[in-house]
Length: 116
Ligand code: FES
Image (cartoon, rainbow, N blue to C red; front, side, top):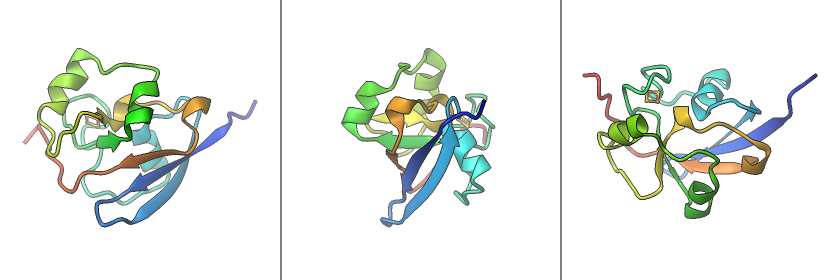
């Protein structure tokens, strides 16, 4: 059976809005990769929680309704991200659900690859 597809909008610091879509259970990193989005350096560690380049900033209401809280490893990585905010998460740890359809996420201006 075909999985439903959900819309995600990535908003860059310059205001550019990039529309993409993903399937139930896809992470935001999967969405970036599968839609061939050209976000420089994004997702460098391929979701293994060692880079923080997949940092996204959410609206408060979206942050609060994410099904999973950030785990300890994610928190450690977020500490290394630039432009950290109270509603920051790692894109590789956010998975799409019906409830998150039409999610809008903000990308920071600069990324920190914690591996380098
Ligand atoms: Fe590296 Fe998410 S892709 S921590």
